[in-house]
Image (cartoon, rainbow, N blue to C red; front, side, top):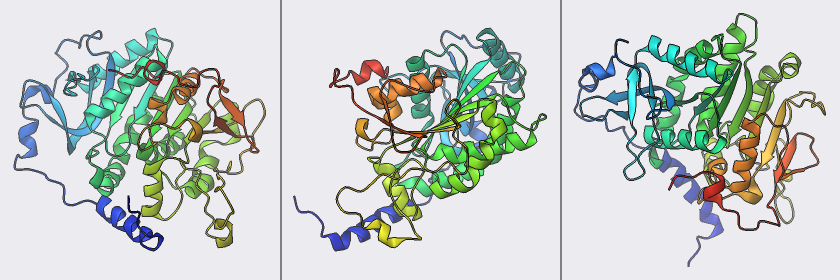
Length: 396
């Protein structure tokens, strides 16, 4: 195989970044009003509740639905409003998602009944770049199945284009959706039955989640959203310095940490998606322990293997009994061609994620580092070839 000369590699990276900016979105010839004219896109609440056995999961989406066919589907376009409903795991053969759109009030009542019956705990999953509604539904179903979570599991799906060459379009739609998401999250946090909201974001979803939590904190009746306690950022595609300077200090004040708020950040040096995102944006992403110091160029010239660099605590006091921030390095257990979804693909990472969902502050395969808030996941010598499919409950 002929490898490109080192001198042209930066050029190839720039070309790849330019390609990821994408072309115009193919809107098609169908007026958006035609997609939603059927009554199933605008239920009144007089309809019967969806069967929870067939549609056990909840969704909220700003995508435009297509109600012209027998099976309602969610498109890549921006919707005319936020819609609520329930869904079941996608069909493995064609990724078709069984779903039912519900009237807003009926959805909230149904969520409250389900949440109250299971102790007030709820998982909210926000997907990242290059995801369709079907792939987000598949991942949400896997999270529910893998964790064995007893409470309601909600998928929030924004209009990602689900295409490799639409990164910038996805960024644009994610920022467009910030107001929709923060309004929804505030209402969820204000539900009296909701005792613990576990928020899981993947990749670009972190940029939707973190500002929304700040907004909810600032606008809650008690000055803090106390039930948003467990925030899990999987491979977050957000500027690392921005997180250190602004986000951590606001989301993890001492009072919030003492009320048991914590943030888990899963990172990998073998995450190719975030490596490309770094080239596009010019600075390291939070989900990648890439070393880069713009104030000290000599620091880049390290001999031998490049060191791993992690986000600081942003001035947060890391207490031995109650740390507010945990960084989990999955580099040594990374799987998949992109290394970007270890929490759904790697047995060791899945086990750690399951423990965090359950409220644990430690897990079996974590090894401490020189930083008190950073841990590395390691392989189990007694199980060198773990069954990733079984441990992560990956659907066949």
